[in-house]
View 1: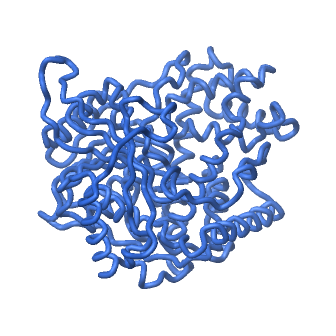
View 2: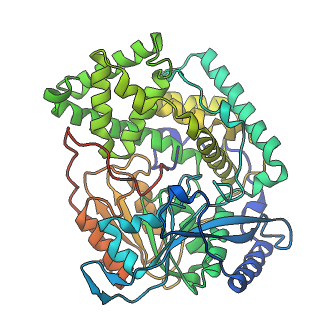
Length: 533
């Protein structure tokens, strides 16, 4: 999974067990000059916008084009790849008074995180009420980062083999199951190397930050206005460290911990712990609505209902497709976004009452999405494995996660299996950049964080705030939605608009009351602005 905050009992074990990072992981002069060369070329060429590929899925107002970047910035005249960029122009009309013209403020570039998520649909968000004022002043710009979707897509296995369903999800796996997952992780890492070849090492966060500067130049922007969500905050922070003079305004929504010692093994340990708390929040909400769902009047009784469903699905998968692994995946999504709570609770309730159809609709793999899901997973794996040292001895993973799983069983081992290819990764590991800026180096930036975010625990926002001098942190208290910009909280949106539209920020920190909890009758009708990260 994506990012996290510190869990001291496990984190203290790691420093002596990580593989050594090569010196080449630190930004070097050759890569720096390569960015300058690529950006100058992009500024000269610009972007020729026209209809978007697959336009039937996208807004008619949205246009697409490409930007050329070097695969390896140390060799700017070497192999090139193309990044696909999307844009909806600023309307320059006040949404509350169509006769009033709004000054255009340039382009707002967005990344939804992942790593591996596509940003191409982002410009359509300007149609939502919470974004109309921002869409009036800014060209809304999204793009597929390198390796993603329509930008030189990366693959590690045949998509038809990506979804394995039904599947188990043991919270305390046996030694035999661990051996199976080790073999699968080794095979996946080999598949990445075989399919990508020598290019594999160039899918990393430093290159994502460099690509962002080339996109800035291609858009004709002297300085960048950027919003990153989840993982997008990490390489946004790398950008701020590498190119502080190129920053106009930056929003970090659901900030991950940029401390080099946290990237990425420790971050994932911490995330597993945080999801346990969010899983408890969800169960407590279900318990408060026991009159609707009948799953138990306490969080503990709801857990027993969930475990009863797991056992039943292990014996007989629902619809032949939904086993314990698919159930856990569907409920993990509720850990990211509380607007998924009603549909998950309803599906679990219906299943235990004898109707599996709602659960199958929610949790069964969508085979038509296999190629996109496999691509996203390949990029996620390559970026995180390339970015930093990882333990290469499974005994370290086993020790740390066995300890965590005693208190946080909900997500711990599934998180291990997602990231385990990094233990056997064939490409060189980098040394993470020390993210930090000094006084006056960077314009004021805005950090947004939900206090109980599990995917990007709150300690990460505090660390980002500490490292980016002059940044301002706005916290949504007692809330856990992963990515809060443009959501239901008017206080948060007020700070976002004041910053992007007027450059106004609170002094150092501000707090917003939580948004209202979902009602049992609600359905997740709003499109999520940020992909899982």
